[in-house]
Image 1: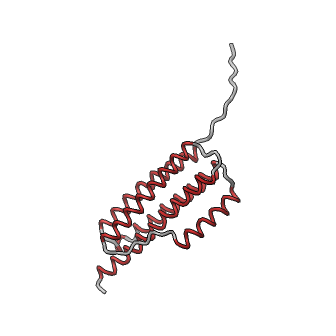
Image 2: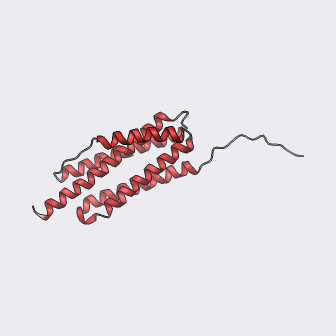
Image 3: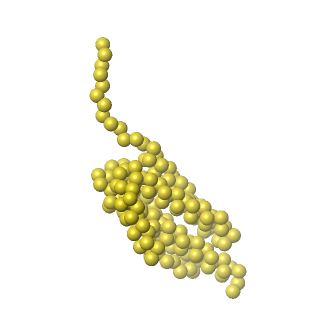
Length: 166
């Protein structure tokens, strides 16, 4: 096998791993939206935006694999089923509060960012166009992570009676 074929195969493996991460990211936010009772409108909107973002990332990764004559694997597979079961258990133990849901989503964003950093560290295994795609997606992931963190840091306000003194 030539070096370029091996490099293309390794790049396909990396891209397929990122497809899996994005599939799991979609599952995370879909489950969070489904399981959350009285989910705030801001979180619903954020979750929908992140789901759409992951679906777009996934399609871009599939397109890039196809451009390089690779074999995209877009299914969730056994790890996705395990991931869902693990999430269900975690919800049982952590609850359905806004705080616990945001913590879970924040954790999942950290996992996705870690996967993207790991992929970028393998730059020798991919062409420049693949590297640039992953780097661009990572920048958008960082923005989503910041949005999730911002929701985490926002404290719900409570209504207080004000006393006016003359």
